[in-house]
Length: 392
Ligand code: UD1
Image (spheres, helix red, strand yellow):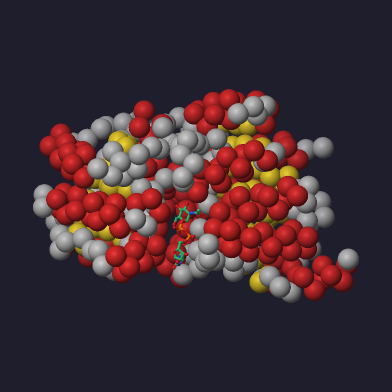
């Protein structure tokens, strides 16, 4: 067994620092990140764990996202060290991707056997690593637990439900998450409303952005070109971009909005693939860019007149900064962004999209308020709770 473990350990990319023996007196946590939105969510946790000092931790990057602009660039800007492990398990179908992450993550768990695995969000890596850890009898905490769209056609909804079903502890970003978990039969003692690590990161990076020289940023040039105002678009959900007719309908609506307000659209690799496959492109008043780094993108959307998106994280971030958000989906798993924030969920019907944007341009859009505990300190609360959970 020992020999097998030793040889297996050479199959995963391990940085030398990761190989160091875990501090004997400190509980070891693995922080899992796989896809772009995960990196922003683990960054505040890494910072809080370092400041706290009671835990040993390792960053495990599953490699679900692998292009430099979808992955590495975020680590550089987030002020966190590069991952201790890179499982390089990106690409492929859902089954292939999930299976590849599981096989590689099991080796990393066997190599050092963490006390807890912390998973964030709802991507395939979140579920894959939760399954592996639980089968090895390692405890799992899920950060951003309890969110539900009730739409099982979304792969993320399956990932959320399955992860929550087996996790040992559940950290929620909004009260609806707690209500959903209670309804599903989880015990009150197993969950905690802690706020939103995504917003911790937003506040951290906004402060950094405001203090830095932004003159050379791609977003700065775009902003100057599009004075006096612009909107921002992101689109990458399979339900929106994998179907030619839906994508064409959304692009036609964007073209209509862009007659009044130029739009900037950083294009996700999945969406770029669909543009090529379907020969579909928006018109000239929609400025396409490659995916932007977190800072460049923040510099862009924080001054936008409105944001059109199908992203989960951006619905929350726009609420935190009070920017009107038009969500191009039929539902949201983040209802607080609608009830208290600046979000409206309009679906993909062209006339509804255009009407929503015109209303914002004519009347300024919803004011909204920042939800409770979205105060930049969620990661600290999580670390404090983890300290209680590992206490003998
Ligand atoms: C994934 C998440 C989604 C999240 C999104 C953020 C799941 C089920 N979905 O969706 O919840 O909102 O990330 O971006 O986990 N690709 C590249 N380079 C990369 C990454 C992806 O070219 O660095 C291309 C590949 O062709 C890949 C495709 O994009 O197959 C889709 O990537 P994948 O990670 O499967 O799903 P996303 O659409 O990015």
